Length: 39
Image (cartoon, rainbow, N blue to C red):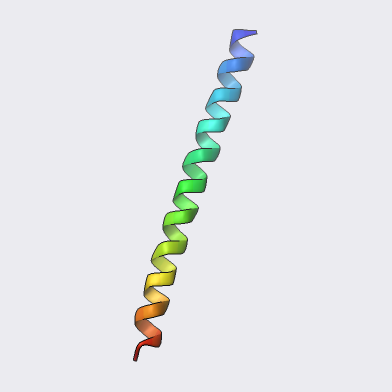
């Protein structure tokens, strides 16, 4: 039972970190796009 809960927690943490990395990537791409289009 505890193992299942731990696994679920790890999965949630992984999903959260993945979401954060995607958000960061989108931010970098948006910033790059903005600098390119300003020319």
